[in-house]
Every structure is written in structure tokens, then in C-alpha cells.
Amino acid sequence: MQTLKPKPKARPFCLSVKGHVKLLRLALAATSMTLFILAQAPEPYIVITGFEVASTFFFILLYILRLDRLISCLFWPLLDIINSVVAAVFMIVVSVLALIPETTTYTVLGGFFH
Image (cartoon, rainbow, N blue to C red; front, side, top):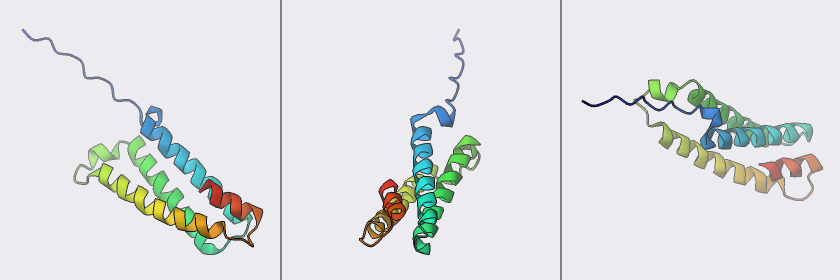
């Protein structure tokens, strides 16, 4: 007779490596946005960084609430990768533009943290 093994308990998202990376990404994007706001940088810098903060927060909330398991019609890892690639392209553009001379210290720090 086979013995039933208990299912291993799922690790909470915030304690996983993926969770730590997402939270670090959110912290860096929020820091960059704060520095851009303090520097009164051009609006595209703030808007693109705000988009990054919002989308990262959305994915963190999605994984914490386990909605990725409830909404199984979407392939969440692929959406997460697409989000990361698009955000990386935008962030590289903003970072390079923020590091162009004749900018304030806060703008340069925002570009550096981005």
C-alpha cells in the first residue's frame, strides 16, 4: 500500500529569490522616480519611471495574492519577461538621457539608480 506524502508547502513569494529581485527592482525604480521628481526632471523621465514602478508593483501584488495560479489562461512567466525587457529598454534610454551633461545632481543620481 502506498503512503501519501504531504504536498510540500509553497514558499511565500516575498521569501523567494524572485520575490527579493522584484522588491529590489521596485525599490530602485521608486528611488529613481523620487530623485527625478526632486530634480524637477522632464516629464518623460518621471512618467516612464512611474510606469516601471506601477508595473512592478502589479506583478508583486499578483504573485503575493497568487492570482497567477487562479488566472491560468495566461502564461505569467512570459508576461513577466516581456515586461522586464520593455522596462529595461525604457530604463536604458532614460538613464542615458539623464546622464547627459547640464543636468542636476538629483537627475544624475536618478539615472544612476535606474
